[in-house]
Length: 345
Image 1 (cartoon, rainbow, N blue to C red):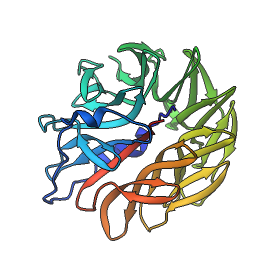
Image 2: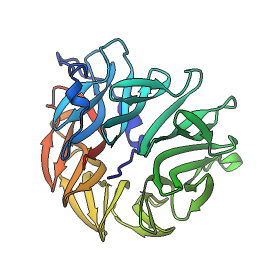
Image 3: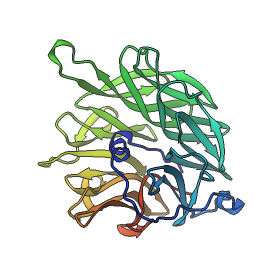
């Protein structure tokens, strides 16, 4: 089973929100070796929990039980993507100024902390581990970057801002979804273009601003994202389909193909939404900032990770939906969010 995603654009705003002062307890560090022994049916979710001092901690939930990826020494970190391959659990994220990859809780640094960077997606096939993200260059531009077994490859020439948000490997082909931001110049109008790289060769996706997730099934390549009209879209082999036309902004964050069905997780207006073959199902309908960020399907069960906001609290609550039924991953005394879900087959 293959699952990747992460939409960084949605979550950067959360870092700017002031944390509430409350006596919340962080999860225990992941010292239990059984936590890293995946078995069929285990559900892993990656995300971040913040404490009352505004420090953030990369966190993994296994079957609803949270474990921290730190002993508390590192005070700014987050987990963006999770992938299980065989007996190994991989998590991509950040620690301080470094892009990192955890394998069974053991950290590997992908960068040296000298420039801005982040990683959003991890994918494993055979003995090869791929991580997608960006690294800023000396001119200050974000360069879309793909790491293979820890070695970085630039996907762009560094003359404009470009980021890689999702990676998927099918056979000998490596697909990366992301976006390019073009300077508005004298007009001041900034143009954002959704992009798909196949084996390093770039393709612009028309009618798009962001490409957040890529999934390949057989000969079909699916990319989820958004267009310049503010609507969630899905590209199939480069052909765009609008998923939502609403009065307020919508976005598609994650795509997963299962048999003849295509699932997309995202947001439409104030609601967390799951589209199945283009038909929307609202997962959270409270009057708040809810969104679905990651979807995967296993044994005909559909799992969606996301957050649910409320007008009664400014703390968003991480959730895992299984076939539409919600499970709370924290209570509302803790500020947290989730980015990725993976079910072990």
